Length: 406
Image 1: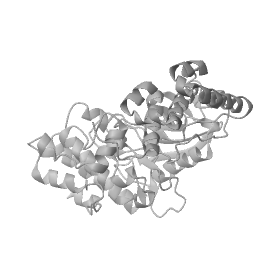
Image 2 (image 1 turned 90 degrees about the vertical axis):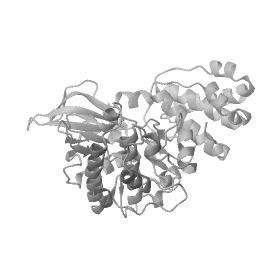
Image 3 (image 1 turned 180 degrees about the horizontal axis):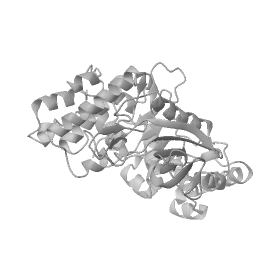
Image 4 (image 1 turned 180 degrees about the vertical axis):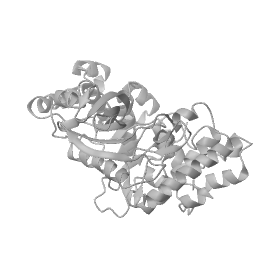
């Protein structure tokens, strides 16, 4: 178990709330009691305990449940009086105003998922549509005609968007169509991030980057279409085990060239990971999901200092620390090194049972050299890999994507 004692109570609560929220959203409910057992200092702080209780209450409501305040008062009698008052206010707001989300952060904690944690962990009220409206407004109710497209089946969905395999009626072309889950009820920030992803990818024209075909809106649902890749992603491939060294080197070389090109065009991906690398039937790599991309020099960035964006096991130290200004080209290089590490060993350089432990490892530990895990790894590949993964608080790697292609 890694040490989280260096975190302040507020920092710990931010991360626990994020972990709690995503576990429920992913269909893996985690009880408050188990969280308190792992982090007993939160139980000693009444405000922190109330935050955890309220977090679970609200995420259950967002999933369509109707949790009873009596249940929580019985489970946590020490804060029953304060909790009842809190939930009375909650019910009053929810019945007389548009609904609100209690957790501002959107966090996914597996290697296939992304993290975007806002530093303000306190309850945040968002004056949006009612819960029922957002639920029905998320995506077309049934598959079928969607403007000039026929939606064939769902490919994937994440915290903000859903992707369908679709056929364009006019051209009869098969595409991947992405839309916002909240549809016409999306917030301004959701819309801005969605269009930012589309625009960042649309400006890139490279054989190893999934191209964007169209950006539009139908019946209040913003969408964009991109090339449909008939194959699996790299994360699925890695479930079979590490790659042969020659194949791993060739794959990272291909990805590096594409990322080098993106950087030259002023785009930093910020969420490079195996799940965002698609593999064609012929084995070609295609980079996708620019949802967290940063335009170099953009003064109107969607994240601010303190925001944590990326995927835990593939995030650079500056991303973990929420240092938005420092996140740049070298952050992608770090992620490339983490991908190479995973290709060679079958696991990312830092991976723990929880997001908290992964964060702690990444900011306090050095990665185990790949050859200690797989002795047959080439010393040269190990050197390149570790050069991309500087220890936290050390100077960022000066390695450029082009150097990984040599």
